[in-house]
Image (cartoon, rainbow, N blue to C red):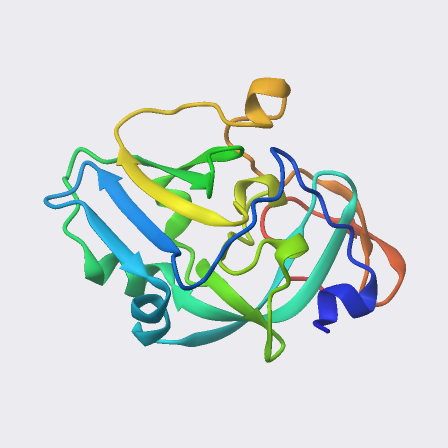
Length: 196
């Protein structure tokens, strides 16, 4: 059991939770790239591994800090050649039920990663496993779960929650969040939550 389940982190399944068979799983990468790529689960596990401590913050009023394991976004980018016109990246879940688009600049945060582990355990399916984005400088709805497709594009687009009224930027706004780790309500100043 991962720390997420142990702490009782809420599990949202917007767009539906796909059933994923790792033997047949493929992460497809396309859009404004020199060559479309398809990475098997074994190829993903063979990429440079990182463990990063950061906080995932939900627009619904809670946040959780953990040691996320996976591939740093900057390392993942070494696997592909991207067109210079790219300014956004669209992430889509396996089966296409969920998508979100993130400004390329926001992905330059060194703590952004394609995560398959948390505190040494695999990420359970209800929390976005086997592979999810962790974008700690944006609201959690920008951290796509069950990532199946990554597309490099040259325009801002909506997504599952953005088309239902959430901001397209996903910037974390000042206010309060419930820190699941300590079970305390804490003020946040906006942007990535690093103060606790």
